[in-house]
Amino acid sequence: ERQLVESGGGVVRPGGSLRLSCAASGFTFEDYGMSWVRQVSGKGLEWVAGIKWNGDNTGYADSVKGRFTISRDNVKNSLYLQMNSLRAEDTALYYCAKARSSGPDYLFGMDVWGQGTTVTVSS
Amino acid sequence: DIQMTQSPSSLSASVGDRVTITCRASQRIARNLNWYQHKPGKAPKLLIYAATSLQSGVPSRFSGSGFATDFTLTLSGLQPEDFATYYCQQSYSSPITFGQGTRLEI
Image (cartoon, rainbow over all chains, first blue to last red; front, side, top):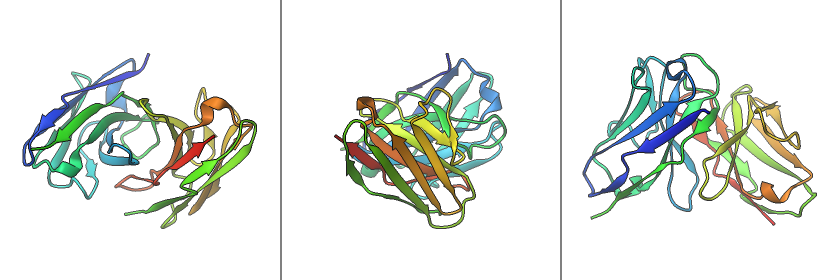
């Protein structure tokens, strides 16, 4: 069964940092682009960041550019999101998601999602 | 960035109805448009990819159409489990963007 499991969420003060992890199983992780998507409570889905299969190209939403860094370890079958300079508006449920089609890019529909990990930024 | 605009933002319907949700892109995106269903407490579920292709395991009552800037998701013969929020998403260029969502209510 293809599965993604996020971890690393928690409560952090404004200006603080947090690192999210996503463990993949049931598929050949290195063959797919990956993304992080978030949802603020009661709001819609927002794509946060994406990374190509070998990690050599990444993309970010304007709202997180310069503060968040997406990375991956294809040996450990894991995706990461380093979040720095956190703001109250970053409070959300963070999902990792797999690109539907194999290939280098993350610019596809996303067919496998984790259950999410919650990040709360509050003083 | 490409802006995705869905309409309506909410919709009331009954079991057995046929409903249509529209999504408009702020620039041409060919067929790089995907549709998701999202229920509270669950992960989003991919329904339609590349504008018209049905994702494996998704019932055939879901269908998608459109090209370039205008797209539709049609649900034919609504079932109780279909009441959820639906999102379109463009995968033409980075940053990926979602529509604001359409809440389908009984």
